[in-house]
Structures are given as C-alpha cells and as structure tokens.
Image 1: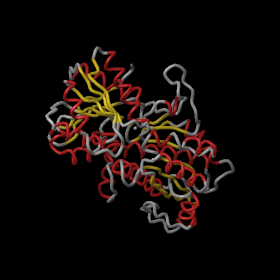
Image 2: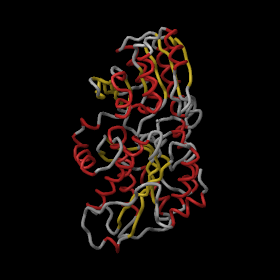
Image 3: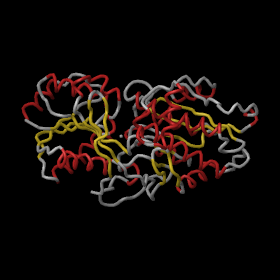
Image 4: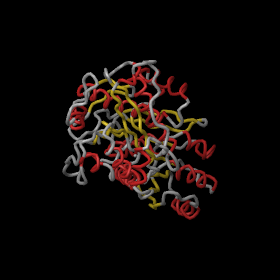
Length: 406
C-alpha cells in the first residue's frame, strides 16, 4: 500500500540481542520438550516505529498469533516456530538491509512483509536470489507481481514474492466507481505523496474517475513527513472540488484533512488502505467525520472466521492496529507454515528447503481467517474482495463491500 551499517545490524542479530523489536514466540502449548525441537524462524519486516508504525505493528501481531497457534497445535511436528521482526521505518534502504539480514539467518524459512510497496521494490531481488519466500499482507502496487508494463504485458518479476492483499489496479477503480456512482461527485482534487504506493493509487483513481465522466479540478503532491498543508488547502479551496482524493498514508492525510476542514473546505477526503487506521481518526478528530477509504477484503471484525484471532489479539497485549492487515498477516504466515509442513518432516530441514517452500506456497489453497487464500500465476491473491469505509460517529464503518472487474 524506507541505514545503519549492515555489519552493525548483522552483529546485533547474531548476538541474539534483536533490539530492533521484540522477537520470539510465546509457547502457549506448555511443551517442555520444545528445546529438543528444530527452531524455524518466520521473519517480519514492517515499520515498527515512526511513520506507519501502528499498521506495521498490526502486521507483526498477526504473524505472532499465527506462530503461537502453530506451536500450540504442533502444526509441524518436530518444529518450534519463532518470530524475528525487523523495523524498516517505512524506508526502502532499511527494508533492503533487513532482507539481507533475514537471508543470512539460515533458520529463516519465510518472511511476511513489508507494509509499503516502495520498500518491497528494494527487497524482492534479495529474497529471490536466496530462494526465500516473501508474502506481503499489504503491498498493492501492481508492478510488484505483474512487472513494470503490467497494463499492456504482464510478466512476473520474482517467483518468491506473493501477497494476500489485492492490487491498486482494483482498489483505485473500486474507489473511483464509488465516488462517481454512489457519492455522485463531479470534480476531484487529486493529491499524492510521490511514493510508489501513493502515486500509483492516485493515478489509477484519477483514470477511473475521469472514465466515469468526472473531472479533475486540480492535482498536487506532498512529501512524507510534511505537516503544514496551508498552501495546498488554498489551492483546493480555489478549485471548488467536491472531493479530495489522497494517495498515501495516514501520517500526512490525518493532518491534511484537519487543515482542510479548519480552512473551510468542507468536502470529504477519500483515500486508500494506507489511510485505513484508527490512528487517522484519533489524530484528525471530528474533522475526519465523513472521510472515506478503501481497503482490501471485508471488515475483519465482521468475519466469524476471524473471531478467535481478534479475541487472542485483544487479550495478548500486542500493540498496533489489527483491523487493517492483521488478518491478512495471520493468513500470510499460515501459508508459509503450511508450506513448511510439506517440506520439513520430523524436524529435519532438507537441502534446498527454501526453494521447495516457495514451490509449496505457490500451491497454497485454504480458508484463511480473512477469506480464501490461494495465489495466481503472478503470486497475486485470488481473493479480490474490497470494502469502502467511512468515518461515522468517530469510527470506521463499512459502507460497501464487493469486487471490481474494471
């Protein structure tokens, strides 16, 4: 939907300090023989501090519960799973560095993450070179799975990369259709944060909106980390747009919407899943009322299949927002764990295990807590469900769920 020396980072990892974030799995099974089992690590890469950290911590939490469940249920006999979570701070270079560290740890047989599509672009090659499977619960940029020319000629760049989130090719069009047909909006001002995810999503929304007969009242860009949007507010006000579409994350949009409303621009701010966080509402306060987002899947709180997961998450003390990608992270980790179960027998990791696990993930097919889990020939999820949410009385409320076929 961002560089310390690699030598330093590797040193931290090999000493077992793992100070980047809390690591390790709680063994709820009470199995006293766990020390005799083979330890296998599921890596996590996400922003755990700073920008986007509420969402990133939710990804880590989803994986942790999946690992706890696998250990408790002895899903892979002879194996104890642990989590190694690394903080990329939403910085591509840090993600690449983390990917190298995970690859160099022979106990790591699969990785969940990253959150940001821009970070993924710097990690894919590292994992592919090592035949290490990577499943993102949140990346939505189409080119990650279908290549740079995905609109005219799809070609999968990396066979080790998969995702449980559907792409912006569908999310942008779904949002545009809702804005045109349900909201009856005619003039949109489009803003993006110039990042892979944000710029790509904004472009696809604009294409869909104009295709449906809407007009673009204006366009502009912001930088990640910006806090003063007064000049942008003036432009939007002069444009007389009846909707503002924002491609980017909640860190900037939560401030933008407040400054828009305080500046007299009383129109909704509409964005993608990067805005879908409780933190957005908490920061923007009452000015977020009526704003909208699209996000992948159906509301996890409404799914009976996710009830046990949500109960465990709330009781665990885990931080972060599980509602955005927690369920998809759980399913991503479960896909890896199931693949490992088909490769690792009686705790014995065979030669070439990483490559074999990639092949098993490609064959994945099961009912996840957030919906059916399987992957097409590009590594994309076959679950195309999307939902529009609106802030109603201070909370995100699902107002439409469905699919988009273009």
